[in-house]
Length: 422
Ligand SMILES: [Zn+2]
Image 1 (cartoon, protein in one colour):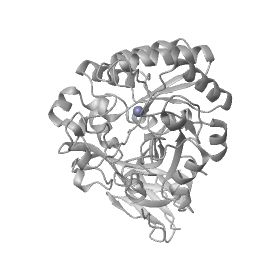
Image 2 (image 1 turned 180 degrees about the horizontal axis):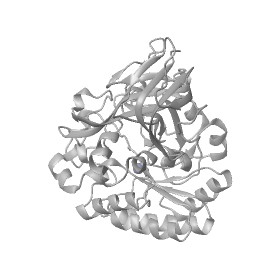
Image 3 (image 1 turned 90 degrees about the vertical axis):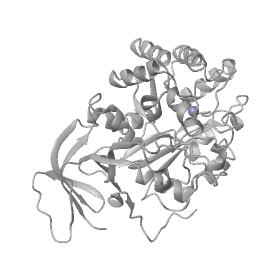
């Protein structure tokens, strides 16, 4: 394994509050030293990071790999490449695959990266369903799922409608110390009414407060949701939440213009909602930026709007959309924290950090780089991207996993001995 010297980058490590220009030396896949003007030994690959930021490898708490069962939308190869190209070194996959990840047997087929020995390229973590087949009726054997290696539980894509089942699920997750991730949707109210989201959030937060269990709300999209979450946070509930790049960069006006490629659940809301999302990213109510990467085929997205499936892709644009819309509003370390240390804490995972002795999982970002979004050039199999044609600024230019460069300047340099075949 080649040693690497990243020269002169701005090192930003939210876990340790480090923010300074420094060289960073990687040897045998491990971060071994920092300092100004480190002199490389013979054979060390020197990479000039002047003017770039060097951050811990990004973690996406919310993706849909479509594996197993829906390889027409995304497959092992395209999913892995899209994540690496986007600057991610760890991703968390939801359970709404075919079959649903609701049993240890189904979990085993979903462990596609581990099964192929590709952990040196991308770490993929799996979430278990809360209820069998996501139908909201019968709880999954969560203790059994925890034993085989799932890291959290969620019925994402759907929401448990029966309060008794929801309470039983929260109690079980508390007992097992299993993070629970909530897709908030009350089915009595149409999803296009934001009441569907915040009404459900209110019910969940009241239940979590009574039970005393930590709770994470997925993809918040409207002003009432963030205000509610803030109230419960202030009064001491261990509640965290995420939003997605589309909710702080787009509104329903964009949906009217773009159509199916901007159709997702929850849907795009008003400008007032978008502003509230930004404000609550700044004040810390929203802890995490997640992609909710949801690939679909071109054919499916060409269906009449009412029939086209919900979801947009996001792995390859998350950094650029975040920096384009949030620069000068959030600090760079604040943005990076929401894509590294904050989601790791929620999932009780090892913190992504740039400390001496750690495995070198690193993303290098060029905040000055401007590039047009051309979905046809994505590594993802899907093209359902609402930012197509936009020029965005601030792109990942290098992804390093365990000390191996996987992506440089948008080109993948994947370990050729282990290509990620589908
Ligand atoms: Zn969801």
